[in-house]
Image 1 (tube, rainbow, N blue to C red):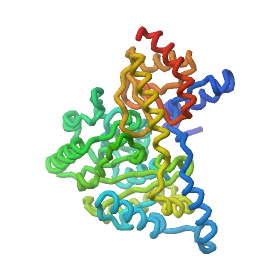
Image 2 (image 1 turned 90 degrees about the vertical axis):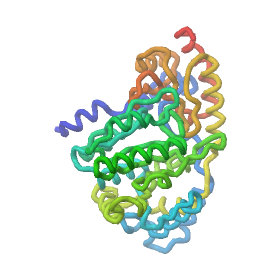
Image 3 (image 1 turned 120 degrees about the horizontal axis):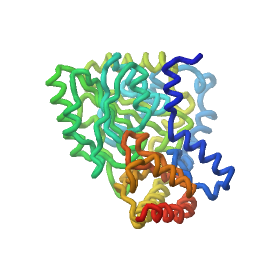
Length: 395
């Protein structure tokens, strides 16, 4: 008999993953070329060639017993130092290797920092729309996720609404920029004002409020847009990063946390996060991939391929009469449904073999997410189906 809590989690298992599986079944029925699966944020662009070369170099040159063995729970010192140096060079920060903790992807990193800071009953605030797993990650440690309703005109965080929900029980705020599912990049002005709101709340309640920035899409931006580095704006900021999207390595599960010295009780937080990494069962991030990514910190995937998809899909959908904010980053479009019920709209899209994820999965009903990290030819094939969908709703 499984745990009662797991029964509920199984019932509410990821809609995105369920649609991905449904897409495979539909492909078997109708032929893969006739199914337009925009459900999963699985990078379609191959990793840069530097990755394969780095893996081979690590296996060929490192001393026996080193590559596959245990190391400090935080990761190899030389890897963490290389990442700290790279961040300092890019963003004008002043991190050392002790401020970097290698993690099992961004998801592992978020669970590590939440394990480190949350007591049962603590509240964690995030801005809708948000990655649905945040709710589960917070619940893992007895916390409560509080979602701030969205500003659907811009999808920048609504800071006036944030002020209303902050209270003495607030332990953290999670942001995600570039954002999944909207592709919106939070502006410098937004982050500056967010910092002011949090600093004011800390003084008002006499507590520490940690800002956790989830940044797996940081490198995927378009038209010269820059993603401000959050630790430069707020003293209690932690960054969770993943190479899953920036180097197209989602299955390798490799990322890191940045835990700056500016944090309240920084030494204690750093030490506790090391312990959390171990006792959550991760023990350490994958050793081979740590050593490989450290050699590829300046490598990049072909973002132009995603940009080409973005322009075609955004241009066509808006011409057909659909509404969406133009994404500046990531590889998602968040499209407004022509009816209120996003689940019904997604179900009706399936008639045309279009797999779109309801926005209610991200805490924002009335929209659907379209992941355009797919083959460009598939997008071209899907356009007549989107046209039929638009006509069905009188657009």
